[in-house]
Image (tube, rainbow, N blue to C red; front, side, top):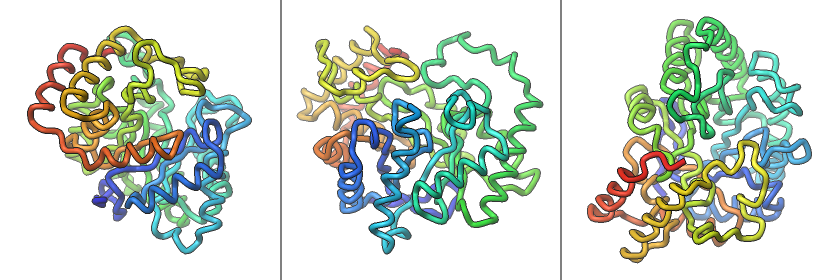
Length: 350
């Protein structure tokens, strides 16, 4: 699998990243280890996790995913340099993590120490802010006039950004973090962090991970343009829209133990009539061209201009195999034209 530079960093990562958020809820430790071993065999060297995982978040499963990666690393010390480990510090609102406090210097340092213990490593390759302190237009908050941007205290945000960036710089200097990145943020957030880094000679954000898939394309063009022109890696999460673009929920199906049967922190927000109509249209395209809906959906994201590495997740090894195989699928001009027609019909289906 092709390796590409992670933004302005010196890290080379595979164009497919192994997501892990189901490990500890829908997947056991042994299954997590099997997934890691298989992914590495297939050329994936990039693993993404977070202190809040497993998902859906709960006090009982918090940190389990990092711990599963940690036990794998403990068994495979000679492979630590072969893998790029990314984790994330939780933002505010999760009451069992630092009493739900927003991101600040002390909290970030405490969080990193916890992640390093869980991961059984001395450093993380990429440390990301899971979500910003302000409410950003993510997790189904992207509809017109849903958020009042004028109510944001910009100066307070900038002060917090500088405090956060300064704390991260100290951790980079200590060798506990190699590079830093964002998640669930916007062009404004990216540019503010880059501006502050330049002014104060602090580390640059080298990446951002946001939801991006055939049902959720709001980051194109503006966020992706911001990333490309600033040498910030763009990392789509949920390229299958939480499994919806695998087709598993077609015709009212609700497979046992699937994501939509488990209560989610932000609700089952992709379950709308327009989403199902769009999924049927994409399913029709895939079927006409001899592809599975999973292959079509993943190949679209894998090949999207400006995407650095796509974060995939699976609850079974068979699913993981199909996800990785989709990397080899090439979408023809004809298929792309048919996809474009559906996007125009259902531009924002949820």
